[in-house]
Image (cartoon, rainbow, N blue to C red; front, top):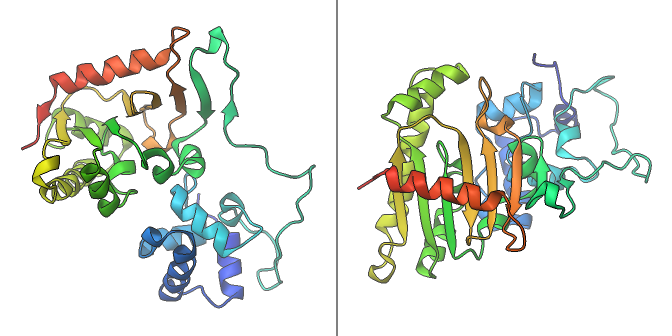
Length: 294
């Protein structure tokens, strides 16, 4: 249920930035200090008003959280988007941090034990994962990126086309495997999530076209470095494999959006049997069965 107001709304009103256009200008000013690629990537108007009202199921994408936290030093994104109780006209200041009230680390770091295989971190949701590990952190400098899932938003929506093109020109090989937007199982997933007909398939088509647009700009020397396939099968996992060493895996839960999925970070360990090999084989099997997008 939406709340009447979030802390973010109160703070914006106190700074006379509660209007959408004014907020966008401030967002760009702060984003430029963090990373020039974030400029212009402010939330949509509908998203902005959800941030103000608290009509959210989880935290926004990691880059949004970074900008909000730079915009309001001393506050975490989770605090900014939490319901605000009390007099909205009173001055609100960041809490004083101490060892007793400091937030616990978000990931659960696991020791390397045989019982834990090669799992190195666990996050309760994809939102939590993206709050700690940005797409830039994951993809920058990678020589091979393999991804399978539904719409692959992390690559197509949260990573700059220019940086992606530069990476391909520098030798990065990318294999992107989408759930077929025209297939049976895309429509089935929309029904499972309770979404309007065509919601997921439209997003997937846009993301496929975004990658095709990048591919159309690739020089002759880098041709073949970007592969795009689609599959029409029951959707089970979102799999991202970096340089055949690191693997990020998220199951698709019934009646829940992808951002609500628990997330495992797995790092290949030659000294013990682990999950990396399992999910690498799953990806390769799916890729081989999939249809290439022309």
